[in-house]
Amino acid sequence: MSKKSVYTADDNAVIEHLNQWRVAHGVSQAALGRMARLSGATVSQVLGGSYPSSPAVLLKTLLQAVDAFSTQPDADAKPVESTVFRRGLALFRRARAERGFTVFAGNVGVGKTVAIRAYAAATANTFVIDATPLMTLQILIKKLARLVLGEVKGSTAQLYDDVVARLSGSDSFIIIDEAETLNDKQLHMIRRISDIAGIGVALVGTQHLRAMIGRESGQFDQIRSRTGFWPAAVSGITAEDAAMFVAAAFPGETVAADVVKRLYAYSRGSARMLGKQLLPAVREARGERALDVALVDAVAVSGLGLQKQGSEVRDQGSTAGTGS
Image (cartoon, rainbow, N blue to C red; front, side, top):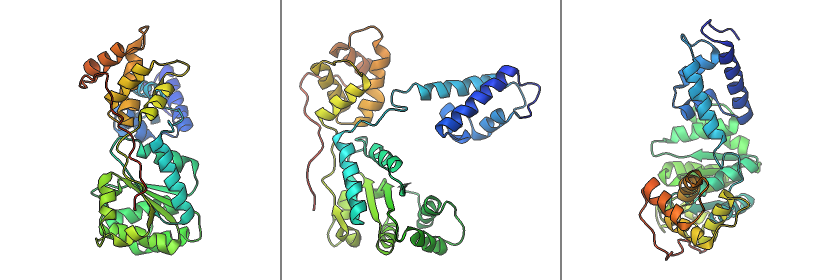
């Protein structure tokens, strides 16, 4: 690789290390740039040897981003198999087998997306679309085409036909996250693909999604009639789930019940708050200190700005139910 004279031997060695790390972890230059808060163009120049001045400072920034990624407690960890996680996987498996629709709804932060990613990573021919309010019907079809066909060529109508043809007779499965942002035309298109190709579909989103689809004699009636599996929306993780998250964060330790209880209280039923914010903050602040309620309170209140919790904790748990 040809480099300008401003690149030292150490710079070249760092670049080689970064490129090997990217390949090993499946991280693109653009993704590495987002991790380091640098533009994709800058990262491309630095790693390609064409940056016009010494890249030492930027390489240090990239190394720090890689180190932060690699030392995250959950970077390569197995997902905590909470009740929410298990519910999601069960719904996906059943809808796939029955080639029908399922609705997986719940509060933000309860762990729905974790279940989606785990299922998709472990199950071939699973196509995940992250819906957005700005996504048009044409964009949705193009996203599907890119996932299913590997390319986007031709008109929207041709892409639709090609997607249906590729999916027909397969064991494929479509999961749409943030599905409450879809409109009736988009859902109609997904329903037609499911009907014609004979594949299952999971719609994942907030409680609004379940209300939207479940309304009788509404614009989504045809989706509702094809949705056989949709338990009540998940309001939050359970106390038992919280104990699993704590055990995963402190492997090999016996964490006192009052500490687990207090951590759960601060999480307010959010797996994201507990697993991504509270537990990592407690781990970082702990040092040689005992893992006790006082430490949890100090981290939660002073470090994260949460409201002080008392000893009484109400179970935020998942709402059970079978739906209609």
